[in-house]
Amino acid sequence: MKLKRSIGLFGIICASLGGMVGSGWLFGSLYAAQMAGPASMISWLIGGVSIMFLALTFAELSAMFPISGGVAAFPIFTHGKLVGFILTWITWITYVVSISQEVQSTILYMGNKFPSLIQKVDGVNVFTTYGYLICFVTMLILILLNSFGAKFLANANNFISMWKLLVPFAVVFLFLITRHNFGNMGLTTDSAHEFAPYGVNGIFSAVALAGVVYSFCGFQHAALLAGESKRPQRDIPLALILSILICIALYCGLQYAFITALPETALANGYHNLSFAGDAGPLAGLAATLGIVWLVTVLYVDAIISPLGTGVLYVASSARIVQTMSQSGNSPKFFAKIAKSGIPMRAIFLNLAVSMLAFLPFSGWKAIVSFLSSALVFSFAVGPICLIALRKQQPERKRPFSLPFYKVVSFIAFFVCNLMIYWSGWDVVWKLGVTVITGFVVFVISNYLSRNTIDPEHVATKLDYKCSIWLLPYMAIFCILSYYSSFTGGQKVIPIGWDFLIIALFSLFIFYLALKMCLPKEESDKNTASLLAKKGTN
Image (spheres, one colour):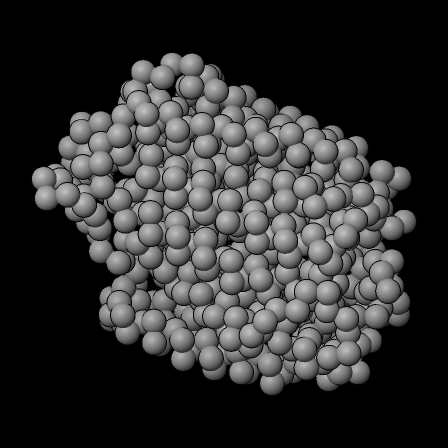
């Protein structure tokens, strides 16, 4: 059964906005301010503009191949089965863990009102048995919402997205008119604080670790739902660009309003030790401090709607990734089946099980977001590579949206992806390396076990090891650079400033290597035709 094309431009924009306005807006302002001070405004601008370059490459790819779960298909088209599996493996893990992350955000926020949901263990808020039960029930609700079909989901998300935008913009307005202390920005001669108290290191670290990148990564929901868009060639590029611009304005405005509304007592020990009553739910706590009692209630309601609205989208998008993996031979055929509602329900239930397991190893919003940000950006970094590879492999294919100066824009997108991963520091990058290695092991084992039962209808039945060799120096050199970096966990050997040049040269080398090792045109055409046929697209 084919996926139903029932979502218009407004629905696609709302899907992208819904993915970007989740738990990030509830927590990001606090953590970004702690890491970069008032200069966190720059962090949000850097994050938004960087993601814009990345989104432009996906705009061409998604319009050219308007299929659901496209992010899982593009590397198969260009580099074959192994590269496709590794990058899709990382994408799938991050999307599934993101479901847990959004549910976790809601329940932790609600723990301030309902103490039976959480308990402190070694100073960290963790769930009680009752809290885990509520998480599981919440997961089931997200699945139920997805079971009604894409059109219902899009229509419901339209209303949710409007709420999710209205409340943050209302918070910006109310904070500004209630308390606006420009001195907190550190830009006047009588300011008690500096604008950038932790220098450029703090600014860049906040991009990667404070939820900035994570907040913008939801743009991909527009591309992942391309197979259900009525006019994907026009709507996908437009939705990506507009939604990111809206979110840049929202997050910068929210950060400014948050900083200028802070009472002096909250900054008594500097931005790094920023704290105030109720800061476990930072915006609600600040609203209470300002005496806007009714807004506190609204924010607690939004703490349910915003993260769970984003969680619904992650359930939908991650299921489509599993479906694409199944159709390409990288996961069992069982998960490729589409229910009568037009939804891959088997894949959704698989993700439910994995999402519940993902609650166990993570104990804090910031810790899990730091890993998710880098993993998502790593999986997205293949987009610019795929765009140029497909220009070479399939020049005759119609491109409804053709990216101007595609080589320059694609390299910039790849470069900024590597920068954002580098800024996350060694403490995150080594975990990303372990994730890549685990994916490779899973791939080898699964292909060894199924060596005599490979479905001849599956695309990319060749393993294409030669086309994946570039991943080894990519991950290995990245780990070395990160280990000697001046960011979190690094040995502080590579000075800030010189690292831009080093990462640029490193990016150029990997970019060249990846493009040299892409599939021949015949193999690319074969993989593309086979998977598009399975997707019901010509």
